[in-house]
Image (cartoon, rainbow, N blue to C red; front, side):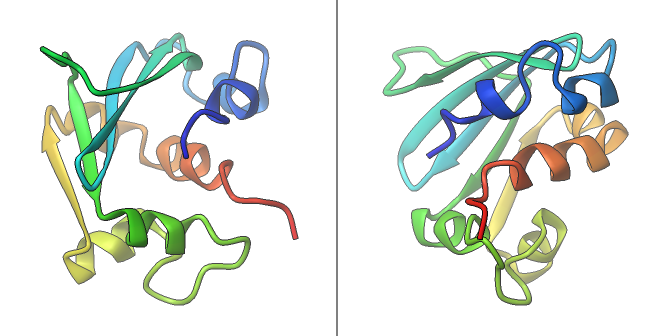
Length: 119
């Protein structure tokens, strides 16, 4: 579900340029399935699917697989179009160190939106 991030936000991408200096261990969770995203200098260097024995992350974004699927639609419905809209509806949970998430919120929104299929 999240593996495409290395192509959409890898080294040299426009997205990576938006978050220069950001080194972050992000965990994306869909139901009980974890995906670790390693970001170095704003670029997604590695995306690894779990299960993990002892996962290490700074920030985790958790939602149901159905919520992620609705979010990742080419044109999501209202309330599914943005992670803050998901948070407002109680459909996503943010855990851990929220500073990288909030300091780079626009980057994170664009990063996750980059997973949407083109129409």
